[in-house]
Image 1 (tube, one colour):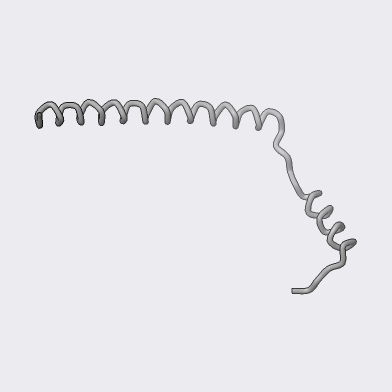
Image 2 (cartoon, one colour):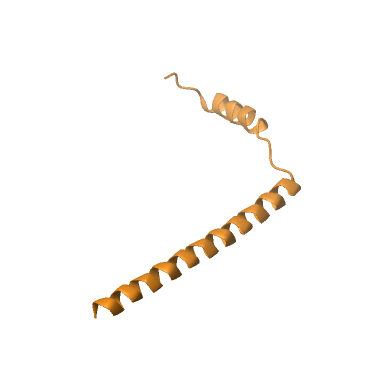
Length: 65
């Protein structure tokens, strides 16, 4: 791999940085809302699964004792 001097490196970094496309405020807000909704859905799902497993385990332990 060829080595570049610091000036070339900085020029290449600036050229790559110019290619970055930042999301708009609207895109950021929508994405944040979608993440919050999905986190809530998954929290409810895992809470329900945990509840079912707990009740099942308690039933098995009652039968076993």
